[in-house]
Length: 126
Image (cartoon, rainbow, N blue to C red; front, side, top):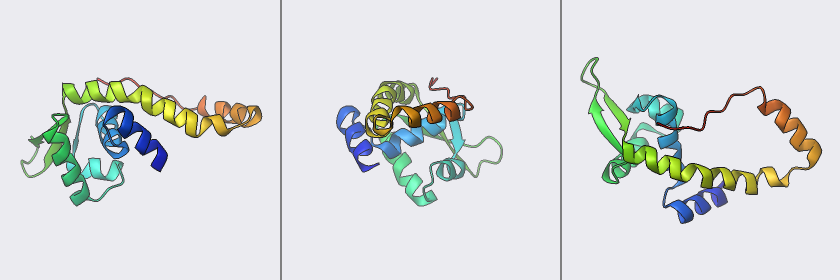
């Protein structure tokens, strides 16, 4: 995982954890409450607050008050965030392929394919 993070950041300037945050937002339709985003990304709320602050500074996400009660904070994926995620996704997928999939033999790949055929993966964002 460390190599995957290093390679992604070197090639795109986006840390793997930031990629995850942007991806979680995209999968959720473009926005999530801060607490839900932290839970999905498996990070503490305080850690997510710091990460989101950096992503806001980069213009990849923005914060908004929730319409429901005004107490919570919603993190919203920006157009720039969608573009950055779209740019980084092929790099990330190549890294996963090189670092994980390439290590499997043909029999293992057949088993993996059989398992993955049961899962629908949508890698489009925006």
